[in-house]
Length: 411
Image (cartoon, rainbow, N blue to C red):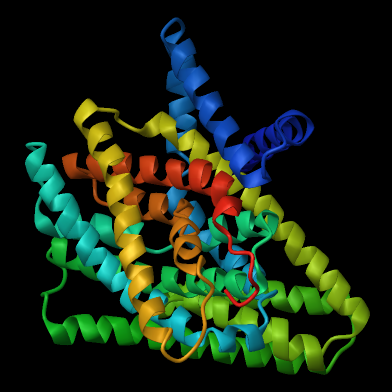
């Protein structure tokens, strides 16, 4: 099946399931589409017990999509830029300390504690998995997913300051998480020696390079937007900035996600206030909101369909279920420590820790990173556990997040 046919099938399923969800189920779009995709996949699996060709054809279709390439190589750039476009830099600056700690130290802490806890769990279950692969699982499951977070926060009614914390963390920590994951993967596959110098060099190249490229792209885009007043051309400039910028970041081996976040912040703040007419601003927002909604819908449908390519084993499923409370406990500690430390210099509402803990959703990025692992027995184990955590995060945490939100605005 060619690329056009794949897109046609996905768009059709997304539209049908989106209609069915809006008309009858009335869940948030992202959650509804994922659950309908999951139910559709399970129905295909059941039908395959009687007509094997159905399951075989559907599995070949989903396996041919290459989810990790579709998300990390294409969709993520547009989703991150669209998300950053509506984040106020002033609000972000007010929460900069907690966001910076959660997006850096929090990710690294979570990676090693989660990885170590999973290594112990697997030993208890009688499953031998090298410690480095446990750390890989910790790295891919630690970052909160900006796509899942932004899609659900819109409907949750979070206080503005809390929304800024969760959104800011999710926009920046995926870039850090991907770099940690790539470092550990290079060590696991023997492509990099685990020395401080090698790891520090990779971090500097990816993170600092991504931030600098994002600033450069943002200000080039701002300068071009400031000199014209034609919303069609201005939208085209932002589209080229994202597409060309993300491709350039890949060629330079620097963090494309961080570059897109920074560029989106500059266009959404500096360019919005100084380089856009009211008409351009309205059209630009409408365009990127549509891009965001369509790609979000397709992504969460894909997450539901990915169950078709999983190899289910009882011990893998059991480990995945045990990993859920472990990951939540680690998240609780990773959130609590910086909040308790920063409380000495600023106020937090009483419910901010539980809100940040429960609002740390995992999503498509974790699944994509798991799918990018080299083939082997450990890959099926990690992929199964990742999938269960993501399904729980979106279906359970996403639908109940409103219950954990504080009522005070100083969250």
